[in-house]
Length: 286
Image 1 (tube, rainbow, N blue to C red):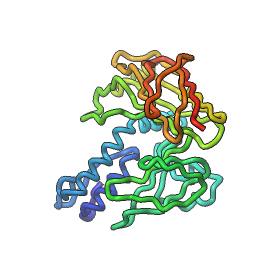
Image 2 (cartoon, one colour):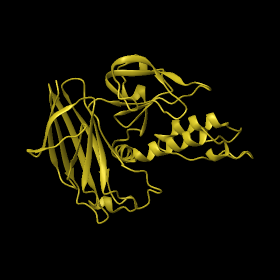
Image 3 (cartoon, rainbow, N blue to C red):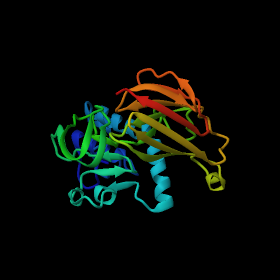
């Protein structure tokens, strides 16, 4: 970010950080004589850049899974809407939105001075990451985008793993818990999401040293089932002991893990899963 040929100002740099935060590569780099690091511009631009970086590292498990999918299938990490929704002609000419993996729709602000923007949401159920509003697509919406906010939507049915805290470095970072954000679909159906964990440093993963969790979320009326199936042989550095689950887009009436009832406070619960498979069943309030 910052550009090579000319100098950025604070607003351009902040929006540039947001545009790159959920893409494959994030680096401030320029050859101009004017310093273009976030702190060179002061507030609110420095804080806006910081928030973009925090979002990236909170969602690092999603990026990691998207890179694995790219390696296995060739699907891009950062996908044009026309790639993800090829049957929707409205997506064919959209060049200022993209998908991260299968479930996150990112809509960077690309106009100077803008504090809102128009976002196209393809068919399906979409959750606003910031406000929690649920929107039925296909639809085009005006979305608020103050300087510290990157417009971001999550497809209904997605299970989004996230780091609970932003580390100073990813080197050797093995958290003992993960946040698991479950976005309730508007209607019946099934959606698959994935979490992939390894040591992050070696090729031991090629010999089975990983923990790979496939999340299958299904809805039938008021009933939700989240099935987590684990593969891989694990690795010595693995530390995760639990998932902190939060359900968005619906209110839990009751829940059970592997048939045992669990308490749900404020639509949240903890699953002591470590590296094992489990089944979460839940009933939504009418």
